[in-house]
Amino acid sequence: MPLFESHAGFNITEDKLQIVELNYSNKFLLENVDEEFFSENWNVNFSESKFINILQNSFDQLILRKPLKTDLVSFSLPHQVFKIFEIPYDKTLVSNDLLEHYKWEISELFPDYSPDDFVIRAIEVDKSGFRETQSVIIIAAQKSVLQHIHKFCVKNKLKLRFADNVHLAANSFVVIDNPKSKNDFFISLYTDNKSISLIASASNYPFFFKKLQLKDHDEIFEAILNLYDSVNNNGVDSSKALSNYIAGSFVDDLLLQKVKDEFDISLVKFNPFANLNLSDEIDKDFLQSIDYNSFTAAAGIALRMI
Image (cartoon, rainbow, N blue to C red):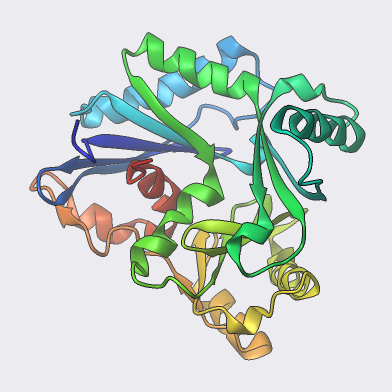
């Protein structure tokens, strides 16, 4: 099997489904970029039938405009699907005991949920070399949503490869943009209409991950300040980050300039299509007209190899 195969990445937001399809034959070729709004805003608590129906309607419109050339697909999922937090851990515990400890923490932090409702991933922050804290970042995905997506794929004869957090998917471009940076760390922000998150990572290994809810998008500037303060308060000098990136929606030049003026932080907007060759079928006018930054997660998950 080749290292990379043709692959379509889908990003689910609150109000739409985005697609980035890539073909690979000695080089990456961008086959499709598109988005379709949902008939109503998506909610993590939707029943299976409602979830699949809303997803199906938008998917049908996308493939009506341009059918898929691959059956391999992956999904990036919004923050509301995940519980993300950091806790201390005991290195002397075996893996099964650690898992039980993580489940207990979930039951304490989120008493309205059963720990068995989640697929749990743990990232040991001290392995990055940039933090000595003996703690783990817990990324817990709601099983029900993953099951709904799997059933949607089966229904449409698609092969599901990956499903991941929207920011982790977008963060793939940190490594893509900096392939030779082995001893540096980077900071990336991801924003949508209800949240903003920050990841500090080295070689695509996150060692800090925090998200904040936004009551109103006007809070984004203050939220960025709070997130950078959190990084600094956890033993990482954010000013030493080699680059600071931002992806997602509602990222305009006024925000970037304000962050530069107030914090002396130069945020770089991801352009996921900058280094991709375009298929002859790509509508170049459409590509130039879209908010390309908002497709970073879909492109990032489409480029996922492992």
